[in-house]
Length: 110
Length: 116
Image 1 (cartoon, rainbow over the protein chains, first blue to last red):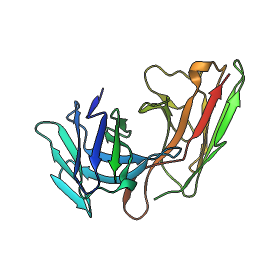
Image 2 (image 1 turned 90 degrees about the vertical axis):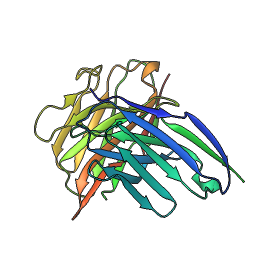
Image 3 (image 1 turned 180 degrees about the horizontal axis):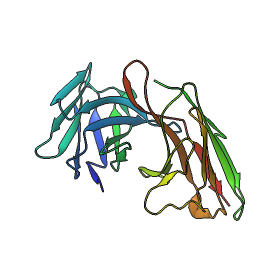
Protein backbone atom coordinates (compact mmCIF):
# COMPACT_ATOMS: atom_id res chain seq x y z
CA UNK A 1 0.00 0.00 0.00
CA UNK A 2 0.87 3.68 -0.15
CA UNK A 3 3.51 5.00 2.26
CA UNK A 4 4.13 8.72 2.72
CA UNK A 5 7.24 10.08 4.40
CA UNK A 6 7.49 13.69 5.56
CA UNK A 7 10.45 15.83 6.60
CA UNK A 8 11.36 17.64 8.75
CA UNK A 9 9.35 16.70 11.83
CA UNK A 10 9.91 20.15 13.32
CA UNK A 11 10.82 23.44 11.66
CA UNK A 12 11.53 26.78 13.29
CA UNK A 13 11.82 29.96 11.23
CA UNK A 14 11.96 33.67 11.81
CA UNK A 15 8.96 35.72 10.79
CA UNK A 16 9.34 36.75 7.14
CA UNK A 17 11.54 33.80 6.21
CA UNK A 18 10.45 30.94 3.96
CA UNK A 19 9.57 27.41 5.10
CA UNK A 20 9.80 24.24 3.02
CA UNK A 21 8.33 20.85 3.92
CA UNK A 22 9.03 17.79 1.80
CA UNK A 23 7.16 14.52 1.27
CA UNK A 24 7.82 11.36 -0.68
CA UNK A 25 5.32 8.71 -1.66
CA UNK A 26 5.66 5.12 -2.79
CA UNK A 27 2.65 4.29 -4.96
CA UNK A 28 2.93 5.55 -8.54
CA UNK A 29 -0.87 5.26 -8.81
CA UNK A 30 -1.31 8.23 -6.42
CA UNK A 31 -2.71 11.16 -8.35
CA UNK A 32 -3.86 13.68 -5.75
CA UNK A 33 -1.66 15.38 -3.15
CA UNK A 34 -3.24 17.74 -0.60
CA UNK A 35 -1.63 19.64 2.25
CA UNK A 36 -3.39 20.24 5.57
CA UNK A 37 -2.81 22.65 8.42
CA UNK A 38 -3.89 21.53 11.87
CA UNK A 39 -4.07 23.99 14.74
CA UNK A 40 -4.34 22.89 18.35
CA UNK A 41 -7.72 21.45 19.16
CA UNK A 42 -8.99 21.58 15.59
CA UNK A 43 -9.41 19.22 12.66
CA UNK A 44 -7.08 19.42 9.64
CA UNK A 45 -7.83 22.23 7.21
CA UNK A 46 -7.00 21.90 3.51
CA UNK A 47 -4.63 24.69 2.47
CA UNK A 48 -3.58 23.65 -1.03
CA UNK A 49 -3.64 20.60 -3.25
CA UNK A 50 -2.17 19.42 -6.54
CA UNK A 51 -2.99 16.73 -9.05
CA UNK A 52 -0.49 14.52 -10.82
CA UNK A 53 -0.98 16.26 -14.17
CA UNK A 54 0.33 19.56 -12.72
CA UNK A 55 3.89 20.33 -11.65
CA UNK A 56 3.30 23.41 -9.53
CA UNK A 57 0.45 25.34 -7.96
CA UNK A 58 0.49 28.61 -6.06
CA UNK A 59 -2.00 30.39 -3.82
CA UNK A 60 -0.73 33.70 -2.45
CA UNK A 61 2.11 32.84 0.01
CA UNK A 62 1.69 29.08 -0.38
CA UNK A 63 2.95 26.91 -3.23
CA UNK A 64 3.22 23.18 -3.87
CA UNK A 65 5.54 21.46 -6.32
CA UNK A 66 5.27 17.88 -7.55
CA UNK A 67 7.92 15.67 -9.14
CA UNK A 68 6.15 12.52 -10.34
CA UNK A 69 9.31 10.86 -11.57
CA UNK A 70 10.99 11.13 -8.19
CA UNK A 71 7.69 10.63 -6.31
CA UNK A 72 8.09 13.66 -4.11
CA UNK A 73 6.20 16.87 -3.49
CA UNK A 74 6.90 19.94 -1.39
CA UNK A 75 5.08 22.75 0.38
CA UNK A 76 6.60 26.22 0.24
CA UNK A 77 5.43 29.03 2.52
CA UNK A 78 6.92 32.46 1.86
CA UNK A 79 6.92 35.51 4.11
CA UNK A 80 5.96 33.41 7.12
CA UNK A 81 3.85 34.93 9.88
CA UNK A 82 3.31 33.83 13.50
CA UNK A 83 -0.20 32.65 12.57
CA UNK A 84 1.39 30.10 10.21
CA UNK A 85 2.55 28.21 13.33
CA UNK A 86 0.77 24.84 13.31
CA UNK A 87 1.25 21.20 12.36
CA UNK A 88 1.28 20.57 8.61
CA UNK A 89 0.44 17.23 7.03
CA UNK A 90 0.98 16.07 3.47
CA UNK A 91 -1.14 13.28 2.02
CA UNK A 92 -1.35 11.13 -1.09
CA UNK A 93 -4.37 9.50 -2.67
CA UNK A 94 -3.78 6.26 -4.62
CA UNK A 95 -7.49 5.42 -4.75
CA UNK A 96 -10.57 6.76 -2.98
CA UNK A 97 -8.80 7.50 0.30
CA UNK A 98 -6.00 9.62 1.76
CA UNK A 99 -2.78 8.38 3.28
CA UNK A 100 -1.06 10.93 5.50
CA UNK A 101 2.54 11.81 6.16
CA UNK A 102 3.88 11.99 9.71
CA UNK A 103 3.48 15.74 10.10
CA UNK A 104 5.72 18.81 10.52
CA UNK A 105 5.43 21.16 13.48
CA UNK A 106 6.17 24.65 12.17
CA UNK A 107 7.03 27.43 14.59
CA UNK A 108 7.35 30.99 13.33
CA UNK A 109 9.08 33.32 15.77
CA UNK A 110 8.31 37.05 15.71
CA UNK B 1 -16.80 22.43 0.64
CA UNK B 2 -19.02 20.38 2.93
CA UNK B 3 -19.56 21.32 6.57
CA UNK B 4 -19.16 18.44 9.01
CA UNK B 5 -20.58 18.28 12.53
CA UNK B 6 -19.20 15.69 14.91
CA UNK B 7 -20.70 14.75 18.27
CA UNK B 8 -19.56 14.56 20.97
CA UNK B 9 -16.62 16.93 20.71
CA UNK B 10 -14.95 15.23 23.68
CA UNK B 11 -15.67 12.55 26.24
CA UNK B 12 -14.08 10.73 29.14
CA UNK B 13 -15.11 7.09 29.32
CA UNK B 14 -14.54 4.14 31.61
CA UNK B 15 -12.60 1.18 30.27
CA UNK B 16 -14.78 -1.64 29.05
CA UNK B 17 -17.56 0.65 27.87
CA UNK B 18 -18.44 1.77 24.32
CA UNK B 19 -18.85 5.19 22.76
CA UNK B 20 -20.71 6.08 19.57
CA UNK B 21 -19.53 9.12 17.62
CA UNK B 22 -21.85 10.81 15.16
CA UNK B 23 -20.91 12.56 11.92
CA UNK B 24 -23.44 14.76 10.12
CA UNK B 25 -22.69 16.43 6.77
CA UNK B 26 -24.64 19.38 5.37
CA UNK B 27 -24.80 17.89 1.87
CA UNK B 28 -24.97 14.47 0.26
CA UNK B 29 -21.54 12.91 -0.22
CA UNK B 30 -20.50 9.62 -1.73
CA UNK B 31 -17.39 8.97 0.32
CA UNK B 32 -17.18 9.16 4.12
CA UNK B 33 -14.20 8.07 6.18
CA UNK B 34 -13.19 7.64 9.80
CA UNK B 35 -9.67 8.41 10.99
CA UNK B 36 -7.84 8.05 14.30
CA UNK B 37 -5.20 10.49 15.48
CA UNK B 38 -3.27 9.29 18.52
CA UNK B 39 -1.71 11.99 20.75
CA UNK B 40 0.99 13.88 18.86
CA UNK B 41 0.70 11.57 15.85
CA UNK B 42 -0.54 11.66 12.29
CA UNK B 43 -3.92 10.55 10.99
CA UNK B 44 -4.55 6.85 10.37
CA UNK B 45 -7.48 5.69 8.28
CA UNK B 46 -9.76 3.31 10.18
CA UNK B 47 -12.35 2.60 7.48
CA UNK B 48 -14.42 3.85 4.61
CA UNK B 49 -18.10 4.10 5.53
CA UNK B 50 -20.17 2.73 2.66
CA UNK B 51 -23.80 3.74 2.31
CA UNK B 52 -26.06 0.72 2.44
CA UNK B 53 -23.31 -1.84 2.93
CA UNK B 54 -20.59 -2.89 5.35
CA UNK B 55 -17.69 -0.54 5.90
CA UNK B 56 -14.30 -1.25 4.35
CA UNK B 57 -11.68 -1.54 7.10
CA UNK B 58 -7.96 -0.84 6.83
CA UNK B 59 -5.36 -3.28 8.01
CA UNK B 60 -5.24 -3.41 11.80
CA UNK B 61 -8.85 -2.32 12.33
CA UNK B 62 -11.78 -4.74 12.73
CA UNK B 63 -15.53 -4.40 12.70
CA UNK B 64 -16.00 -5.89 16.16
CA UNK B 65 -13.88 -3.11 17.69
CA UNK B 66 -15.00 -0.24 15.43
CA UNK B 67 -18.50 -0.92 14.08
CA UNK B 68 -19.62 1.72 11.59
CA UNK B 69 -23.04 2.62 10.27
CA UNK B 70 -23.89 4.70 7.17
CA UNK B 71 -27.68 4.80 6.81
CA UNK B 72 -27.72 7.60 4.21
CA UNK B 73 -25.52 9.99 2.23
CA UNK B 74 -25.25 12.61 5.00
CA UNK B 75 -24.74 10.64 8.22
CA UNK B 76 -22.43 8.05 9.74
CA UNK B 77 -21.53 6.72 13.17
CA UNK B 78 -18.40 5.13 14.54
CA UNK B 79 -18.53 3.08 17.73
CA UNK B 80 -15.41 2.41 19.77
CA UNK B 81 -16.20 -0.82 21.61
CA UNK B 82 -14.87 -2.34 24.82
CA UNK B 83 -12.56 0.62 25.30
CA UNK B 84 -9.11 0.52 26.87
CA UNK B 85 -6.73 3.41 27.65
CA UNK B 86 -4.96 2.67 24.34
CA UNK B 87 -8.10 3.87 22.54
CA UNK B 88 -7.55 7.40 23.88
CA UNK B 89 -7.26 9.40 20.66
CA UNK B 90 -8.94 11.96 18.46
CA UNK B 91 -11.44 10.38 16.08
CA UNK B 92 -12.15 12.33 12.91
CA UNK B 93 -14.83 12.07 10.28
CA UNK B 94 -13.92 13.03 6.71
CA UNK B 95 -15.79 13.34 3.44
CA UNK B 96 -14.71 13.62 -0.17
CA UNK B 97 -16.98 15.59 -2.33
CA UNK B 98 -17.96 17.77 -5.21
CA UNK B 99 -19.86 21.04 -4.91
CA UNK B 100 -19.98 22.05 -8.53
CA UNK B 101 -16.26 21.33 -8.63
CA UNK B 102 -14.03 18.93 -6.74
CA UNK B 103 -13.24 20.21 -3.26
CA UNK B 104 -11.18 17.34 -1.96
CA UNK B 105 -11.32 15.84 1.51
CA UNK B 106 -12.88 17.83 4.36
CA UNK B 107 -12.51 16.95 8.04
CA UNK B 108 -14.67 17.47 11.05
CA UNK B 109 -13.24 19.01 14.21
CA UNK B 110 -12.89 15.61 15.81
CA UNK B 111 -13.95 13.79 18.96
CA UNK B 112 -11.36 13.78 21.73
CA UNK B 113 -11.71 10.54 23.63
CA UNK B 114 -10.01 9.79 26.93
CA UNK B 115 -10.40 6.30 28.40
CA UNK B 116 -9.70 5.93 32.11
